[in-house]
Image (tube, rainbow, N blue to C red):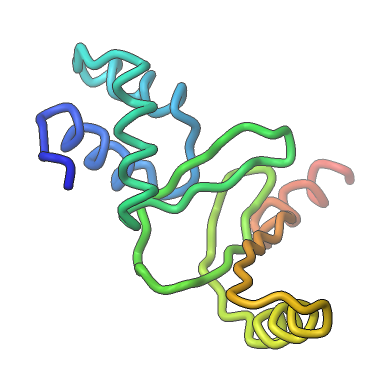
Length: 134
């Protein structure tokens, strides 16, 4: 188990405050803006440790960048993520769970795992886009 250092706690606090998915660079910038001397490599290590420990969700953006968010549950879950503002909603996906188990079984796989994140535009961003198109 990793010990809790001031750097790790600073990253955890900044991640909690971010409210949505954020890149290591974005989190590092926020920490520096608040006066923290923490280094970017330390932010990357702390985020990776938090993700492995179940304290943070991690995913790849459509651009391939790793993004992190404070995890509200250690249980398996999925996300709806706004491509514009980053709003994230944790969702149940029972149909996906059933499908994944069935496909794995039909192909002779056991102990299968999966990640499902759905990217789109939230209602507020959709409304703003529609208003600006007028």
